[in-house]
Image 1 (tube, rainbow, N blue to C red):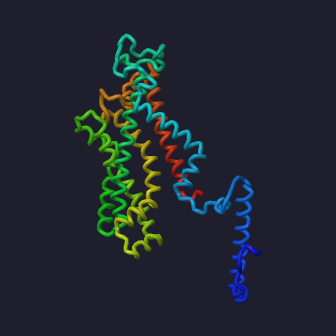
Image 2 (image 1 turned 90 degrees about the vertical axis):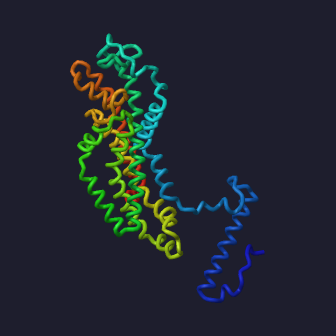
Length: 336
């Protein structure tokens, strides 16, 4: 008995009948193979679905994650950043020293048992201060990046979607902030702030950092809203909010993530620079910038005071920049 019944009409109507006959024969052969595989247990598979590969296309994020997992630059930078985040949250995991405890008898001494990085001008443990300094830098970098990314994405996305006077207003406002020198603006803005917490520094970085994110978000939204699927959603009567959240935002967020990841390392170095100049974090906060500023005067007599906090700052900034480069390469379809 044949595997499948083919109507005679399918053979007698030209090319269409020939096509139908071929499709029917292919289906019968496929069902026969699957039936034999199911009966014989070949390769441990059974049924029709086992012989078919998954036909769902991979998404941009799936491809990006697959590429990132194979990128050694991403793996190394991610491990460094994970380690920094862990010691920023729980510094006692790798040190039991007190960054505030001072012993003037040990001022500017080199490494000693239990104190591998030596002591600073006040006899404080440089190793403990280097470990605890990661907390301020990571906090400022993460919070400032999150604030700038959220504010810039919101304003830039709305400007790119609606256009008109809102777009023109945002562009002129962004030009004003772009014209403010970062270091000069930080010295002026933070010199009048009496708070000794990290939040004034975070607020200043967000204030000057959002225009860059806004321009990136605006350009991505302008490009995404011209795609056919957005026009189709508009023709079907989708609201502006639904088009922004369901169709445009998921396809326009990749450039924002890349820029924000690279900017995070820049914000950490900016906090250290402002603290070095005396306008950022102030004692009794523990910061790499404060320790570098203190140690710069004694670089000839006690170079270890400068070497370790500066090295930790450089490694942190480099790790975030490497992570941003890896994410950019993974999310950029032109590099595939």
